[in-house]
Length: 311
Image (cartoon, rainbow, N blue to C red; front, side, top):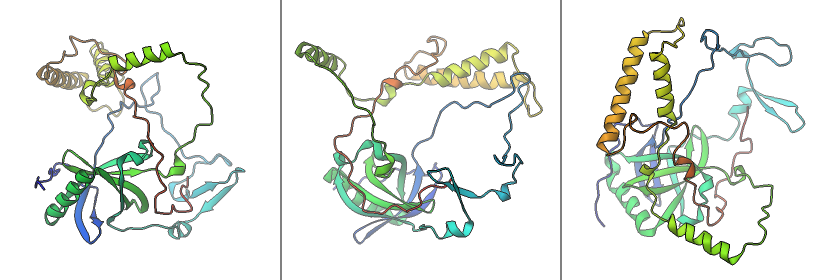
C-alpha cells in the first residue's frame, strides 16, 4: 500500500472536530466545508433613493410588532392549527453532541442515489491520525465502495457517506429517503421509431466525452460586475447614509478585480472580458446534468427523530 501523505487543509477554518471510527480503529479528524456559494446577491432597496428595505416581525393576528424575546417555535398541523413548543419541549427532543463519525457499513458506490446527497465536507487528520487516515483512505479506494456513516452535526444525527477525492476523504451528508419527492406525473412518450433511436444514438456519440468541470463557466456574476461598473462610471450611484466610499474608490476596486480576472484568464489562454462579451446566463453550466441514479438508496440503519422540523 502506497503511503501518500494526506493533503493539508490548514488554510481553511475547521467547523467540527471529532473522530472517524470503523471497527476498533479511530481516526481523529477535523471537518471543513468543501463548497461555497458564488451566487450574486442583491439588496432590496427603494428605487427612488436606494434606501434598504427593512422587515419587521409583526404578528398576523393583532398586527403588533413582536420582540425577539417573545418569539417561540411553532409547529403547524395539517388543519392549520399551531402548536407552541417551549424551550423545555425542545430540550426533550432526541439530540446528540457525539464527536464520532461512526462507520455502519461499506456499500457499492452505485447503490447510493445521487439525489440523496446534501452537503460536502473535507476530512483532515489530526497529527496522531495520519496513519489510520491513510489506511481508511486506501481501503475505500481498493474496495471501490463508500462508507455509510452516522454523524452528529448541529446536535442532529444524520446519515452520510465517506468517499475519496484527490487523496482526501470527503464526508457527504444525505437527506432522509422520505425527503426526496416522488414525481406525481406520468410521462407519455408515444411510439419511437427505430430510425429516430438510431439518430439519437448518433447524436450521443457525437457529443460523447469526459467530464471536465473547468469547461463550464457561469458568466452571470461577471455580467453583473460589468453592468455595475458601467453604471458607476456613468454616475448612476445613489448616495445613502451607509455609503463609506467615494464612487472613485469603488471604480478603482472594480477595475482592479476585473484586471485580476482578465490576467487569470490570459494565463489560462482564455479570452478576457474585453475580448469576449459577458452573457447574462450561464454558457454551459445549465447543460451539465446529474447522472441519473442506477438504484434506489437503501434505508439507513438510523432512525430519524420523530419531530424533524419546527418553524
